[in-house]
Every structure is written in C-alpha cells, then in structure tokens.
Amino acid sequence: MRSASSQIAGPGLAGVLVSAITAPYVLTPPSVAVPLLIVSTLLVSFGVVLFNIPGISLYQTLVPDRLLGRMNASGRIVWGVLPLGSLFGGVLASAIGVRATLFVGAGLSTVAFVFLLAKPIRSIATVDGDARAPGDGGLAAPAG
Image (cartoon, rainbow, N blue to C red; front, top):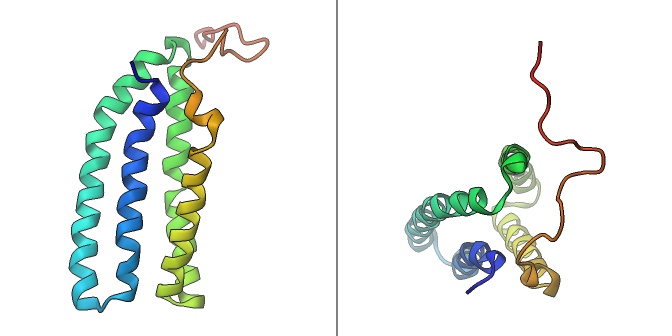
C-alpha cells in the first residue's frame, strides 16, 4: 500500500512535469507557444479538478475530525495568497520582461519541487501521537 504522502504528491509531480515541458515555449514564436500554453493550462486545470475530489476525500479520511477545520483553513490560506503571486509576477514582468519572469517562475517551481524530493517529506505516512497543540482541549465551547 502506498503512503498518504505519495498519493498526495503524485499530482504535484505531474504539475511540475507539465511545467517543465511547457517552460521551453518561452523560446518559441508566439504563434506556436500560445496555443500550446493554452492546451497545457487546460490540462493542468483539469488535473487540479481530478486531484481535488479524491485529495479532499483523502484529507477528510486521514485527518481527525477535531482538526478538519484547521486543515481546511490552512489550505485556504495557501489559495488566498495566489493573487499576491499574480501581482508579484505582473510587477516583475513589467520590470524585467515577460520572458525573464517566466524563467524566474520556472526556477522557483523547480526549487519547490526539489524540496518535495527531500527524504523526510517522501517518508511521511502518518502522524504519530496526538496532533493537538499543548493545552488544546479539543472543541471550543458554544458561544453565548
């Protein structure tokens, strides 16, 4: 049986591979690059949808009920900063050009992927012990 981390990291690996394959398009003429980038974006978006359904089900299965709210909030924080990345990318593209910005993005994506290759990340299968913070008694009392 595969570990939970390998089940979750699979789509991430696919996303990195798609990014690595599409990165050379910055060197091709726009008449070729634009349609290929549109197709690759559609494929990645489709992959995200395919991942979210079983991925969220997996989280709900593995995460204790008392921690599901925290886990969901952590995911929302990650999704919430995406517009900041878009803003940064736009500012960077204005300063150094679109092509150079795409290379910066590809480099940062590669660095992020190398982090996922680290042995501790790949070997995590379960969390041992109680995942609550010290002093956390569990569910909060109802308000009012």
